[in-house]
Structure formats: structure tokens, C-alpha cells
Image 1 (tube, rainbow over the protein chains, first blue to last red):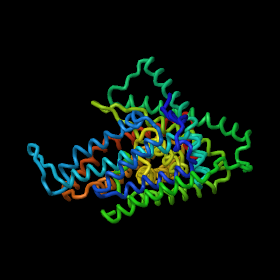
Image 2: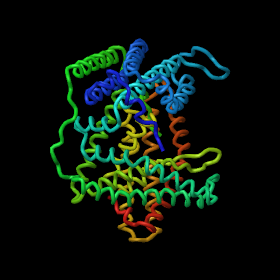
Image 3: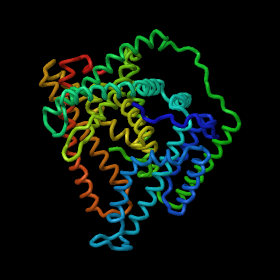
Image 4: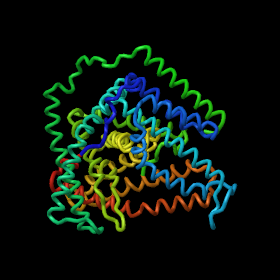
Length: 256
Length: 213
């Protein structure tokens, strides 16, 4: 089982070369600044900034478009519902339904923020390996328990997913087909889920022993693998400046 | 049942992160108080991955199918590790599948994570009742699963509908809240039954897993 992760980590771009700690801080502040935007006049600037960062990252547009496909279903629901129920100023009527101006503006704001934030989020985690990103978060002060759990869970996610797939195949080969909702069917599916949990628990006992043998829990001198240069700091300063512009714009031109 | 990026104002996203940080700090503090907490880290991590995978099991509800959230079961089994596990699961979903979001990670962790602590305490109550009985385990498993997802649904619907639309009519908003909550009732019932069945299965096969790590 593959999740199509770390697909474009090998590319060479200023964003790939940017110190992951500075990249994480800068771009996370930027996406938070995007959620301050409540005015249509600031939207073009948000689109331009997002597109500029995407071009600099050299990630293919098709990659971003493919990743946006699934979450866009949620957006579609909002697009189809909000213009008809939000606001009072009717701009046109479709049969018995009134399309309202306030609803249309809300949809435009939500959709643009959604696409911009998602694109920048994808850029953060697609221009460095997942392992590097987590190490950067640890270097920034994320508690060791959280980073250890994240890395271990990520490491075994594929294997446990394969376990589930094998067990499902075995069930189908033995004639099980979940087509109707019944207590019997739920019982079998709960045994499948329970078996995945039992297998994972048993595997974790071996993992812990292996970790102990490798010195887990004995705090040694861990050398910081990240070294920022002046280019990284300038990049961060520029990104924070742009983010500050969006926050100020959000405060001046809209209610938060 | 995750709120995507761009839907909530910055203030709500920041408040979500603040509550999540406080809950994570509290959970980690409780974990650190345990004598051999390091031994529990690999167990909690692999079970976090396993829960993530088990939630891919689709339950047929004709004409479609639903996938379970399992936050009640997660609370029952992982105890104080449950909140960090939820946070990690949501992070994976946001980064790998763009399901949920990075700015809304805090809010989504509150929606899914706070009820797991409640589920943990509910499931622990079975020890006060009658020990080692499958019926007791099943009943408290059902309650943990049911309450875990029911509280999440209420939080999700209220946060979503009170924050997205700018000018929704009060009656329309109330109707939408009731409709969304009612649409989740079958899922809540299925989660309760599924959690009860898994806890009974685990008590039969590997009871140690029910003694929260």
C-alpha cells in the first residue's frame, strides 16, 4: 500500500533547499494569515502569492489538482447550498430558489481561502520528506512523545494497512461479502478490526524491545542536523512580511 | 466529519489550537506520571496507526456505506494516549489526504479528541460494576463508542454552523443543525454497536488490550 507521499521531494527548488524549520514557521504563519482575509479586494493578492510560491516550488500543477480533488467535494456542498440560504439581497432566481449576494460572496471567500491554504499546506510537506518535516517540528519544540508517536505510527501505517488488505482478501475468498447492514456482518467486521488491533499490539512489543536494544530512552547528544544560512532567514523575513500584510489587510477591511 | 481549511475565521482556528495545546499538555503530563511510560509509546503508536487503518473499514448502509470514526474505542483503549493519538491521526489525514486541514487541525482535534477523554472515563466505570463480564464490557463499550461520537457530532455541527455563513436566517440555521445532527444518528448507533463488539472480541482474545496503555 502506497499513499503517494514524498513524491516530489527529490526536486531542486528554493523551497526544497529552504531550512525546513524556517519554511515550516514562515508558511504556517502565512496560511494562518490567509484565514484572516474577509474581504474580496484582498483575494487577488492571496491567489497571486499562492501561485508565486507554487511556481517557485516547481511542484507540478497536476499534482496539486489531483490532491485537491477529494477535499473539493466538501467545498461543492457549500457552493451548492450557501448562495441559497445565506443573506437577504436577491440577485437572481432559479425557479423557486433565490440566489443571494451575501451567500455568493461567502462562497467566493471560502473557496479561495480553501484552495490557497491547501496549496501552501501541500507545498510545506511535499518539498521535504515527511521524516525531515517531523524532525524540524521536533527542533522547533514539539514534545518528544508526539514526534516519537508520529514517526512510529507513520513507519507502521503501510504495514498495518497491508495486514488489513490481506485479511479482507482472505474474508472475500472465504465468501464474506458485506452488502447489507446486519449484526452478523457487523460482528465479522468488528472481529476484522479487533484482529488488526491485536496484531499491531503484538508487533509493538517486538518494536519496543528492538528500540531498547538501540538505546531508546537514554538521552545522548543529538546533533542538530539543521543549519540555517542568511538566505533562509531572509526567506522567513519576507514570508512573515507578506503574512503581516494579509493580517493587517484582514483587520482593516473585514471583521474577524 | 472534519472541518476543512478556509471555512473558519482565524480567531476560531487559534482558539482550537489553544484548547488542543492545553489538552495535549494535560495528556502528556499524565503519561509522564506513569512509571514505564516509554514502554507504552510503541504500543500507543502502533495502535494509533491501527486505528487509522481500521477506520478504513466500510460498513454497508444501503444504498451507500459509511466509515467509522472510532474515537470512543480509541479513548477506551488508549487512555491518556488517546488525545495525542487523535491529533496524530488528524495530522496524517490533513497532510496525506487533505481531509480536514492544517489551520483547522486544532478545532478538529477538539471535536474528535475531547470526547475520547470522556469515553475513557466511561469505559473505566465498568470496573466499578462487575469485573470480567462480557455483558458489562459490551454495555460500557457501547456507551463509550456512542457517547464519543455523539459528543463529536454535536461539537462539529455547532462549530460549523455558527461560524461559516455570514447572514443565515436563525430558523434556517436551527433547521440545518437538527438536519445535520439527525443525519448522523445511524452512524452514532453503528459506532456504539461496533465499539461494543470490538471490546467484547478483545476481552475474549486479548484482555490486556482493554487495560489502557
